[in-house]
Image (cartoon, rainbow, N blue to C red; front, side, top):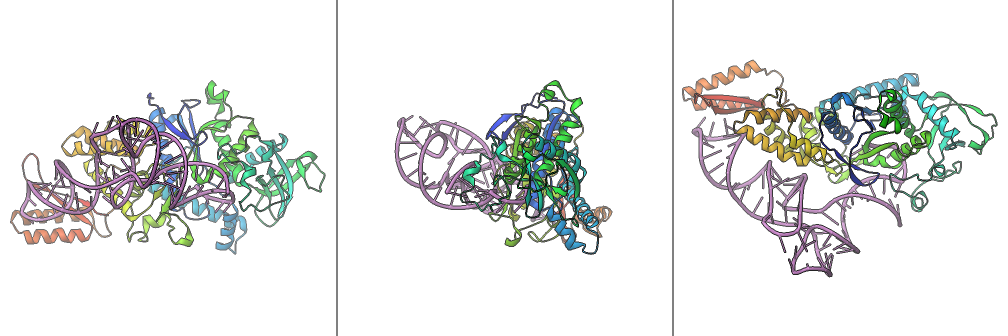
Length: 504
RNA sequence: GGCCACGUGGCGGAGUGGUUACGCAGCGGAUUGCAAAUCCGUGUACUCCGGUUCGAUUCCGGACGUGGCCUCCA
């Protein structure tokens, strides 16, 4: 452990503050993960990469075994149901849903791995945590923060926003003023328009879980039934998932191992992250649920939100035709007429500060590739060397990767002038940031290293015989297979040598 | 209508009350048989209008512009 001071921008206070984990031996972070109904798009990759860099920084500062990073998978969602019905019309719905979520989750893992991300410590699924959600909802009912009402599609357990005096603190919203011009359909079964669903009844033939609630008369609105015990075949609301899973994996299951300081802040953790668009309503509602269920003044100490990725200045959307999945950038020619290596996409994402919008473009990817390749050419073997302190310092100041870049450039320059230590430090730094110190490009089909070596030797022989025409022909031939040759002199003997690399 | 973020050269992106990083692309040069790589050099900017100040890109106010949220959304 080192004494590096990590400062992070907190959406709650709109200020940069020093991270002071409740328990430095167990720094706890939760980030909202994907809803697995379709391929992830490149915008989905941004929070994954941003918080991966934070994860790596935390591990560097506090020790890899002292950081717990939870990123959930949402596999309960009406869009998933719709997709299952569409793609697998012949199958029983639950089976169809499993097919959709398994396939999509596997694709997500493949995509984010290609982008150089570490796996989170825990990756819980909503479907494995229904019991915890039901329990938390019951607590909210018991504490007077939730009620049952009859909605259009059946019974709903709703969060009563009026029961929480400081609801809206994260997004700085005043719900009363909010409604004036907004298109919020009045739902008269709700006590207040801002009340949101915790549990929603499903039609008998639709997927759901049988949840038993005990709900006394005062926690009902416009309900004709009188019995206190209610079994509602239904599914959880979106927000309760994250409240239940963060509680379980960042508190309940590890509470006995936590320090006294952390015990004094029961049910709270250190960092919660996600995209800017989640601030309202998702994170606002998570906070409401978790705080009201546990009677805590806060859910997490620091709330971090990444900015959006735009294409040609606008939000990606299918209707605008500027929508690209991670998979198609990696594997097809749909963007800029070529495939893009995952590490190039990763650097393109990190070139801009995480809270700023990114305009995603071919030019940007090309610049990222040029930069990354120059670093990789300069890097040596990592060995036991240190990660650049300047880079760590830059990241520790609200993940200021852009301020780390000149430091990396300086290392590369030193390495190019023959400084072996700098080359090793550069390699270690690249690995720390999630990049391979060697270019990860792959050879075209039907080309292998042995063939290249033979051809290069053939060319050197031609050069020795001053047959430049033949030598240039060989070089041009290799270039058509994306093999770029680079001649240099052996520093000791002055002999001509040839290096090669793959142009991607 | 309410809330939020942001406006630096062709592009990316730092930073500062006065000396205008850095990188990419461009241009010139070194090196090279020629390339590539590497190295050296080089031009262009702080949205606009007020105010404070000896002096503002930097502080304050306003305008304009862009993007986001208020409905599923990274």
